[in-house]
Image (cartoon, rainbow, N blue to C red; front, side, top):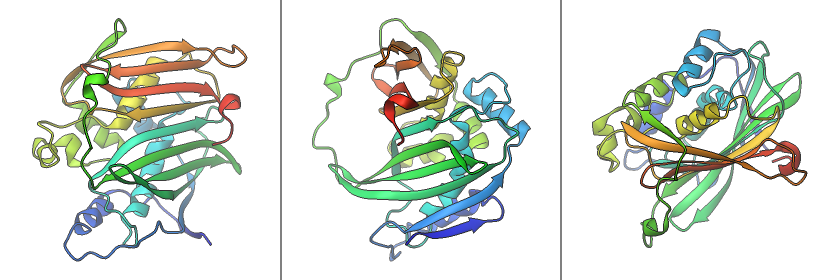
Amino acid sequence: MVAVVELSSGPGTTAAYARAALGLLPGTRRGSTLPEREILHRGVTVDRDHLAAYDRVCGFRLSDTLPATYPHVLAFPLAMRLMTAGDFPLPLIGLVHVANRITVRRPVSADVPLDLSVRALDLRDHPRGRQFDVIATASADGQEVWRGVSTYLRVTRPSAGSDRSEEPGSPAGGAQWRVPARVGSDYAAVSGDRNPIHTSRLGARLFGFPRPIAHGMWTKARSLAALEGRLPDAYTVDVAFKAPVLLPARVTFRATPRATPRATPGGWDFTLASKRPHLTGSIGLVSDVGHS
């Protein structure tokens, strides 16, 4: 039976990062399965100044309609609370966000209070370790209006081999973007994701990167911002995070319309790449992909 933990206020992320660091200490005991627990926070309201700051960092136009990726930021502290609990089977630090699916069921206004919930499901083996999904939902007036599925991987085994030679390079054509070094700290400030791998050269080096890397969810948000005004009211956007974007960077964004079963406009395939792909994604109508 799922235990529901209802919060009366936002949990923030500072304490969660402290718990995550303590969870790396030798002798830390962990559960063997994902906890049967849902974190719930009702009546969450949008701070307009925060929304505007998020829009600017990610390239969206200032609007009263929430970007598809914004509820992920609202739910992120709940996910942190869940994943840093003492009985969570995998340590937060070192998890790799490998894929993300967002379903927008209808446009969501910043005026609408949201009920947010987060659960972790489907702990499973992966050729390089173990992975699981964090399911976040946002509901308004009792109806789900948004859903996000974040897939995380805990790497415990090295890759059997590299397939980089088979990966396509930067796509021909497309929009050339300059991604400044400050994107890591700017997105950390608006998202609450202050993992030092994104904000600190030392933190990045501890995980094998020569300099900080962009947040995966920033690359997804920035890609959707490039398609703003060309998306349907209800859609699902899937992305796979590939090679990280080392900051600063020059990358190429390319999007192509995708045919749908009824030839209805709104579907897209898109990539963000430099020498290798950083992100690949697709957008489809909710009626085409069904309830996820």
